[in-house]
Length: 224
Image (cartoon, rainbow, N blue to C red; front, top):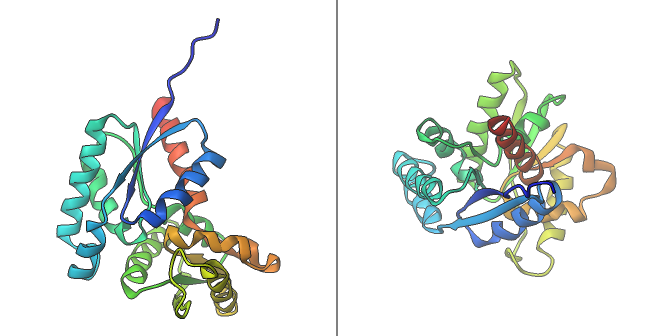
């Protein structure tokens, strides 16, 4: 009888509850054998607002949460917050397990053949982090695409309310007319893909599918 292999435990580091279900859905689709352990701390959002982005203080907090996840026994960590991506980069050297930000893999895919990228997000702070991540990835691969921050405006419709993703899909379409591809920041906005026009879907990128594939590959590399 074949031995039953234990499931891989992946810690998910969230800064908002709105990112939890999209990440669960993507893991079920692309990495169903992973056992997910959630570490939700909305205090990150308060700190990001207070310090204007992924400051040293935010990085210190990220390291504490990541280390707590590591000590709990997860074998890898996936962050679901775009604004925390620069902090995750600073945390990585201190970890004994793989830790992945949400945007780097998306950035690599989006810039593979694009000369310009529209970075769609709901705030300047997210744009700041996305710009930093995309610039680092571009430099790593010797690319110089034009990065265009685009503010997503859904009017009075807020996250979790009916029509939110439909309104975002309209914003994606408008952004697609400004650049070769569109990179949608914030995991909580990924649901808009269900409403994006079919003729531009191949030019629209979201973080979850690329990040899940990346963390799966990282775990495979460690285990092999």
